[in-house]
Image (tube, rainbow, N blue to C red; front, side, top):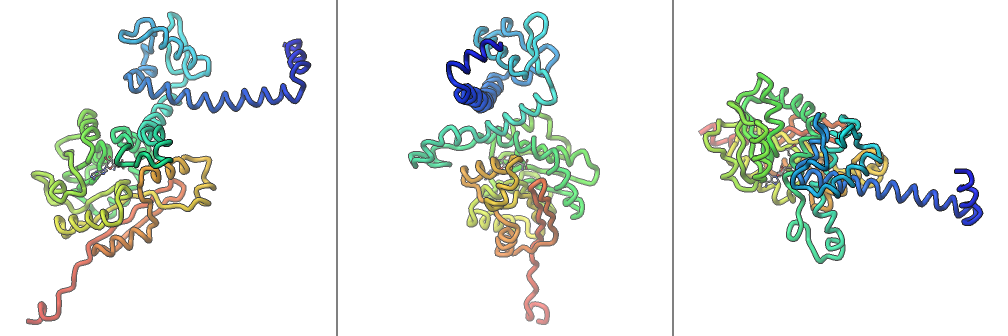
Length: 351
Ligand SMILES: C[S@@+](CC[C@H](N)C(=O)[O-])C[C@H]1O[C@@H](n2cnc3c(N)ncnc32)[C@H](O)[C@@H]1O
């Protein structure tokens, strides 16, 4: 080893050897992250990702429908970089199952916004437009959203909801319905309804068993007033819109609130949102995923707003703020609005 190092320095000079080392380190880490994400995404697409955390693991030679040479090469690489462990008869399993499960969640988040990121050259040059030529993957967006939400947002939102005394709830843009399944475990709620635009998210929620005697999930759009009237629904006292309204432009938010106000005149509206942050505030949090979150939201034309902006939009639609809470560390806030009941006019009271 020492002999080889001396030869390297003699040939490339000390400076050159150092450059080579740094080059290898940088390329190694950048390419490794890129390769790792692509491999895990491919495993997910082929339906074998979760099997690396199972007792049986994956044996490349015995996997029907796979090219065993390619599968072995990739598993070997993941073993070499410390992601998988290899046991006796060439079986590969996650080396650290807890960390591997975290990686699986990161894969869901990456896959949600892979389409616009892979198409960035066309978006950059204006050949493609987000929404017309390329869109995020809704199914992965809903799943990735569950992954993040269940850690803190669900508890945070539920604490706010509990204060309102909500019994019947309509969750607009419910994704897979994971939050409703979370509420279903608590006694204080009655019927819980969820609608979401994504058929595959609703299908996924049903497949996960989120529907119950209390929870009902349907496909529908928040932009269509008729869709908000879930067949057979008890009148909700709260409409929850969690991490959804930023999908819409100001006129669309106004349209949604107008149809909510017309369809459910007495109901409160509870929103959970990621607050808008300026570039300096995001830079300060660069060791978290906040910059990536902002990037994908903005690339996909989502509109992050400050609490003041939300209050203005709701006020224009005839709602007033009755409660709010912000958690800066988790980068989330909830705002609770109630309809402003119009005061009866003088002659309506006295004549
Ligand atoms: C970021 S996810 C939030 C999911 C869930 N509320 C949560 O917090 O975990 C946004 C959801 O909004 C849904 N969505 C987008 N446009 C919608 C629309 N027009 N009507 C209903 N749902 C919509 C998407 O399908 C997606 O499931």
